[in-house]
Image (cartoon, rainbow, N blue to C red; front, side):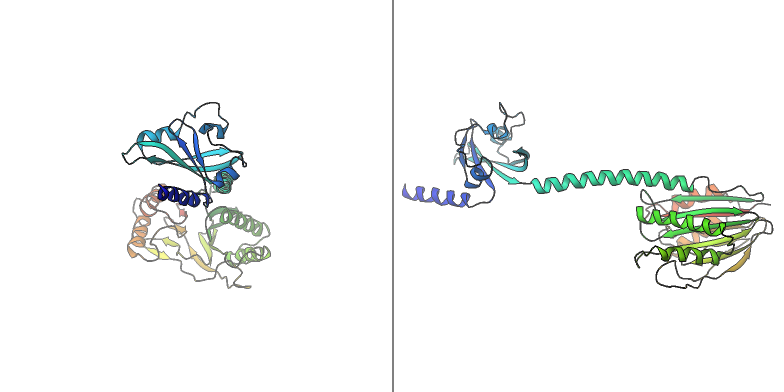
Length: 362
């Protein structure tokens, strides 16, 4: 008998040393034991032995979702969340069992989760706001690239825009100024709202350069580079772009590259790559070496500028060969080509994909 008393006192001292709040509730729903943490934190030092278990929650009767009743019936430990005195607690309810296997009471362990709960609620609220902002940004970005392609007699222009997230860092545009047509595809580093905003900045800066009378691709890129430096952004942020200025009367064009890693192509009976190495728009170089090269589109020729959203385009020759085969098809159709590339080569996107096609038809 003395050994049992010592054992009981020993166990009680262990439970009272716990930081978690503990109480025992009988089968009839009465509180039969509470540890010091429970008495101090949950009932403000008041004696609660003998109270009904639901009194703690301010309920007039047994809770409809009473876990104690369920645990006594099943013998399985359950967990729930309860609010007490404007604080949130995680409550673990476990059965107390006699040697014969009868469940005669439950032990409830309360752990204060208020801080974690508030953080979670704040994160959920911030996430909901962010999703709303992303949808707004997506709508604005879609509006920016919608119907941007002018109608030019003797040419067909077509584009495909496939961001891998709600918004993307890719953008394309086509600006007609008299007999000149400025066309480009641009890719901003990263994904999400910030790259989308920088893509919008790039579009504004190019149009501003064109309105200033600049008509050579390298001059336009130099103008945008100066505007970019004025923003004092992080060194980790950069913009790549490939720009073409087409003379719509003669079909001749100038092109310049600003670090776009995929090589635009022209088809005129065979595929020809418009390779040009150049640095991106960034803070890495105060005076980057943007330069111009020349080409021409004759009747039936077509030009493709695209971003690096095609998985494996840098490392898998089969992917590049398939892209070139689709672009060289005898029955080439702009919409069909964009659909095939998106369906075959952008299946599991890890990056945005933008394609811009200029085809001389007559």
